[in-house]
Length: 110
Image 1: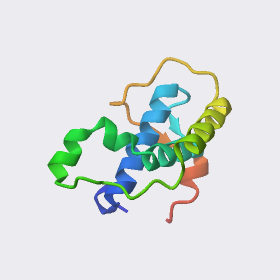
Image 2: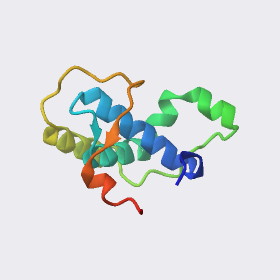
Image 3: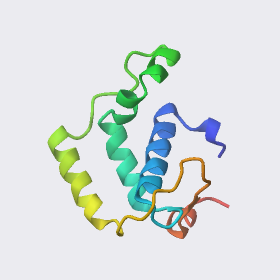
């Protein structure tokens, strides 16, 4: 499936999960926990809050439905998730290509 075929919300999750992988500077792989991180952050409107120009360009005042998680539950989940990450290393620039881990790649249809 080409990136252009994903929904806008899926694209936002992909952006946030890639950013999480870069921020933690782990192994130059996007791991399943980065997907969970991106899903929670997108649910909480982090992308829309940080990218107001996207909302203006898209002409959509509300790019997301009501959040699934409360702010408290989302913060608790992200804190627990953060504790599972390997120790942080030097961040990986967002311009660097990153592959998905074998755990994610195994789910791709051939």
